[in-house]
Image (cartoon, rainbow, N blue to C red; front, side):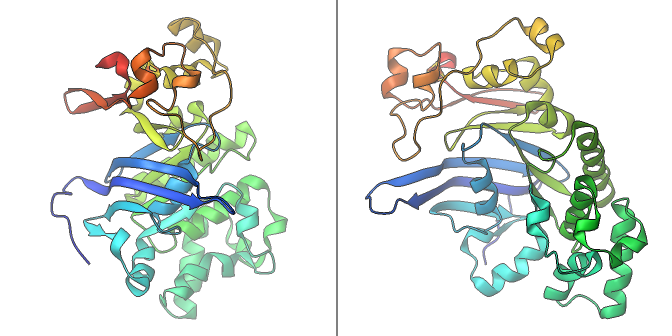
Length: 327
Ligand code: SF4
């Protein structure tokens, strides 16, 4: 197990991460995650946003080591988790948890809620039966559910309540990192804000750090401190949330923001072209800038040369963009 002493402010540091999947009966590979580097500070929420199929969920699962990386480094609190063996990885899992989009599918319907929330404690041998029961009661209170919920089954709860159960299970071991994968996208809008507010409260109360994966820019604006925009396996823009929403640079980010159904936002920024066409096949990503087949501002250089990351930094606010318009 190696340590990175440079991670004073960072809980998570990812460098050069790649994840390729083999294609059955073909020498090709799906390039799901392509050379991703990012940092997540202690107590921060970093949004990873992009269209369905851009690789953001795969990125979250590789960071949690639920999928093995093809290449690259993942440091969690100074420890290189990409290089851990099975036993060390099992121990490291205490510090990193996942909140699912489809929480109902992730719950064992035959188990009572108390057993479901206690499961990570049992797996990691935390406390005896009585201590685990007490911890379950504490967790139910933290997520806004009644103690009686412990003796009920998942089907007895609404979608929002089930997500609260999923959150209670995810924080049971007091993890450092929580990857929340589209945690509110299956919920009604009125319930979404309740769950987002709960996640914000828990972050403050427990000092959690979130990698918050979403396709919904409005949700990202609500909860994130910084945002990384992902397109076809690559991060194309990274900025503090206010900077990204007030001054998006990458043509893809601008198109995503233009698609938010909020007249105030669109008037303020002027009408921008919506995103046309489908993302290319990740088995055969386009050469040069991967966005060039859909980009209204594409130039000749974009078709042949991948843009490096250009950055603007002031008062500690890094705003990076991979686009030749800024070279
Ligand atoms: Fe568009 Fe070129 Fe920028 Fe890619 S590099 S986003 S194609 S302008």
